[in-house]
Image 1 (spheres, rainbow, N blue to C red):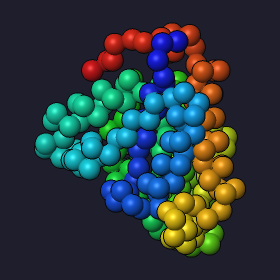
Image 2 (image 1 turned 180 degrees about the horizontal axis):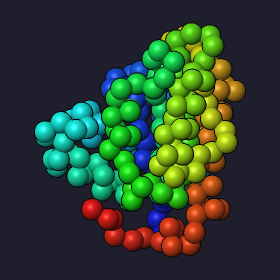
Image 3 (image 1 turned 30 degrees about the vertical axis):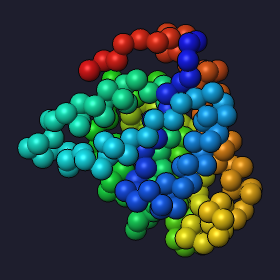
Image 4 (image 1 turned 135 degrees about the horizontal axis):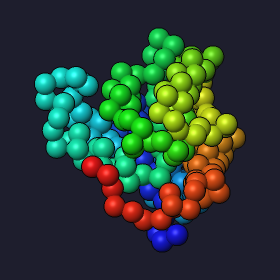
Length: 192
């Protein structure tokens, strides 16, 4: 296989300093350590029109879908709002369809402000992944009390959680290499 595997990272928060984005940053370190190449969907997600809007067929959508097609796997993260994922990530996921996702892998991260964690959100993301015919890693990370999880140095206060996030990223790349059919691991032109 030539070059690193592109992993598209979809974040359900538009704030770069959000707990979700920061958690995905840590998971992306694991992607890089395993030889993957993180591709952040932030530039597209922030500009995607609501699916079904009159301007939903534009260059931003085309670029986003081309990047999704090139991706060998996905890393999804979202804050939990009212027991489910954010509207930001749901809109981005609604644009995806089987030609861009079928047979690929995804890993899931969810953050919550409360102590219970984001179990409902992870269930929602698994349901969406299943409908898109994605393989989902059995491991996932739910970060409870996410607003208090970061130290003054900007790092996660709990090294165990940081390790879980990094392992999630590296496991995603390892699973793609291990289980993807050979044709899926060869460089091929994107379907647009």
